[in-house]
Image (cartoon, rainbow, N blue to C red; front, side):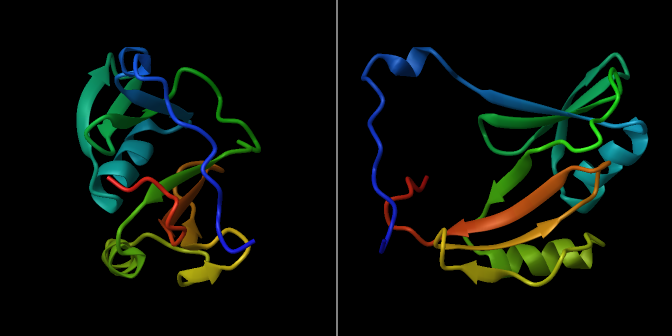
Length: 139
């Protein structure tokens, strides 16, 4: 298959259903998790929920929260992906801040993405990715 296929369009009235998106991940050390998100990734902390969860802005409408109110799972089973216009530039900046990647960015022909992976909080897996598929809805 040369590229992905569009799977559907949102209904015109669906915009009121969801305004923002927050994903929560869990850690044993809130200070270390928060430091990773702010100092290493450069995200802005927008909310401190009673010293239990810190929520960071990822984009104008998406957020990532790190919390200590439950144990982190041994195998989270999810990859948190940051989509970037220029993965090579982002890789260089984040590497300079001390983010340790699994390796340099590379092209996945199977998914038609250019990406690299890294850890940083507990066993969570993060990805820095650039879609190469023209069907992907760019901002």
